[in-house]
Image (cartoon, rainbow, N blue to C red):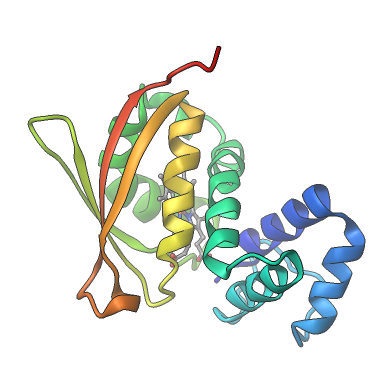
Length: 186
Ligand code: HEM
């Protein structure tokens, strides 16, 4: 994994929970590096390890932390990708090009040697979508968080149900999604 996401995680923890917590997390996680450089490649285990340590500190599960950070990630990736995300009218449009254009073409421009996950996305006639996620990193909860962040970005609500998970013996990680108009709280 490139330093980009680890960097974004560091900034997220520092801003939300304070720099002291980040220092403790780094120390306890037994990670050699102290700083992470966006375009450099790091061991895939670093981000999950940092997230596990954070979860212990905050009394949350690692999956909760993955979801929270994923939700925050979409905006960060969108802002780093210049005009790319602005060309999509809504979350459905963007998801239909997530694999073939965003991850397979644009990420290569942003980060040489980047290895994004694979997504197989379908839009069904009733408007719901199926997203199959596959990655050697197994970060499906993180992916779920990013899908929530995508809905936030377009000011939509999302129903997102994971119907298969490789961590629970499934062949793939599959999400059934429906984007809905945002219900405003009075
Ligand atoms: C709903 C939209 C998106 C989803 C669900 C998604 C999902 C993910 C996930 C789960 C990862 C972690 C790596 C892994 O699982 O193997 C990842 C990595 C990445 N994604 Fe996306 N992503 C989305 C949109 C974007 C956008 C808009 C960009 C902007 C160009 C982007 C660029 C990247 C980059 C640069 C990486 C890191 C690759 C590496 O470290 O080698 N993604 N994405």
